[in-house]
Length: 375
Ligand code: MRU
Image (tube, rainbow, N blue to C red; front, side, top):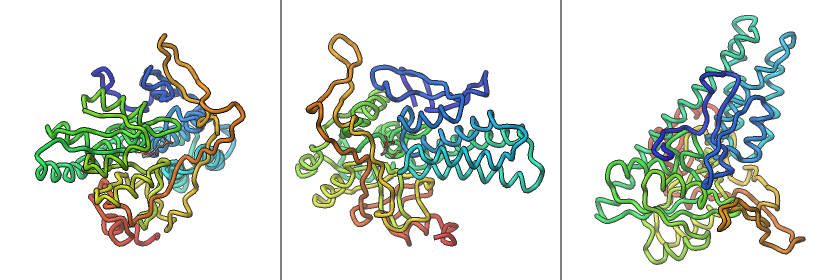
């Protein structure tokens, strides 16, 4: 997608220096567009943990490149598989909820282990495999997000055909292109609908405490010329009661194979309000976000982050300076649960790259029959 009319992805390999992975450092959005260089596995770990990059699919992409960066510093006289396993274990501890992290680490390990079965794999060959595979994981993610967009477009089109007026969509957090490599998950159908000329207005939940909605979703919708309004997190229920929301679309960080959805804290309350008001509530996700090992949402690990994120807020002062402001009494306790689980029964459907299904095991497996053997 575009920033000031120029196309970007969220992560890429520097074409003039293949020892350097570049990212858009999202901590500064929307006030500044800054880029950062990642050169070591520690850089990738920090970028994921401290949310320079965030959003489940992008965390996966960054982890895949993190494994490649790790290999650039391996000792030549040690087992590459052992060193890579160690790097993967380390990266896996960066953030607990988004399953794409473990998925991408595993994809990289699998690729190298497979090659090691066939030959005595050299360090140079390991690095080549990891680089190519990281590039493929990111390129595939773009195609997947675009397919989610095509599949979700049908839902928006159907509402528009019936309503013949602007379609109002509520979204939570940032499941936009900044949360993926490009296109986004929840935003992909919105971008597709906009490109088709369907009038859209997006209600953007600000999404305290890190304000991914107010800072990042608002930024990307604005850059794409899509009409939106930022709302504080408690407004959605009121809008739904007053028929100002036609459809909710959110993303997810981990969805069980029975359809329970972990997403940014507050998603559950929006799903309850949508349920009570008969408003369709869709979750857009790549299949890389489905955890084929977990049946029930209660088993999804929920990230608990620093209470500093609740107590302080960042923003631009009237003088144009970026500042961190204390909101609470200095010694206030704060609890910062980063995700919640929306039970499958509140979800109208899952929009995936393979099509739309219901949030239950049978329907999910009908789109991904190859997974029936492992669940
Ligand atoms: O804590 P974050 O910003 O990584 O959380 C992101 C979300 O909750 C997104 O909605 C989710 O990852 C889906 S992204 C396509």
